[in-house]
Each structure stands twice: as structure tokens, then as C-alpha cells.
Image 1 (cartoon, rainbow, N blue to C red):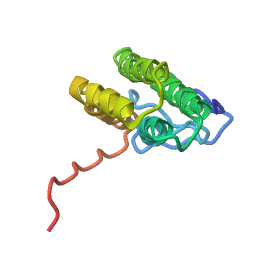
Image 2 (image 1 turned 180 degrees about the vertical axis):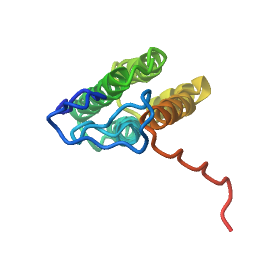
Image 3 (image 1 turned 30 degrees about the vertical axis):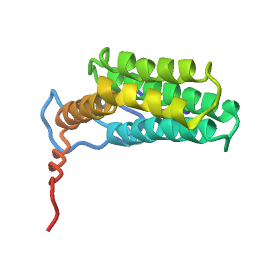
Length: 164
């Protein structure tokens, strides 16, 4: 897990060059080595998608179980990196790990079954019915919005539902 980031600080004596978009005292200064929370949210979403993709490949006999287990590790690492970055900015993330661990628990249980497409379909249906993909997206989007506000970054515009 890449944890090579530095804690954000608003200290004017910081040895690292810092940037800010406002002089308001309550806006945190972003250090150059601080990961962007929106990038970590993207990594978390990608690791979630890879977890389910790898599970599907395993169920179809195309990859070994070890690759699914590697995806579980990446998912947990992505979750931990996101939660740690949120903590750096005093953003509560206690609601995120239960959602990702639910998905991991389902995948681990799925791996106790014989590999078969029907097995992956059953577990994918459970995870969708539970709403985990949407909850994960919603939670990370909310945390990123809070982070952007705290750091003085502009809000990300809402995505349009239809394109013309």
C-alpha cells in the first residue's frame, strides 16, 4: 500500500511548499505530497470494480483464486488509503469500511463454493440488492465534496444524467 503522503497543515513555517486557494484560517493547506482525495476515491472505485471483475473471471475458470484474493487485498488497501486521507482532513469515514467489508465478505464466501458462473451471478445479485456499489459511490462522493470544501477547491459539477 502506498502511504507516502504527508499530513496537511496550515502552518506558515512548513518546510514544504504549500498551496491554497483562500486565506481563510479554517481552510486546510494542501501539501504537494498529500494525495488528492478524489484520486483515492477513483482508486477505491476501480479496486471495487476489479474485485467483481476478477471474481467473474474466476467463476468462469479464466483466472486462479489467488488473483481474486489479490483483488481483495487491493480493495482493502484502497479503502484504508481513502479512510486515512479523510482522517488527515478530519473527515469522518466510519461509514465506509462496513460497506467495503460487506463486499469482501461476500467474495470470500463465494470463493468457498466451486467456481461456476452461477455462483458469481448469485453473489453479484446479492451485492447489487444490498446497494453496496451505490452506497460506496455515494459515500466517497460525499467525502470528496467535504474535502474540496475544506481545502478551498471548487466543487465538482454534477454529472448530467443524459447527454445531448
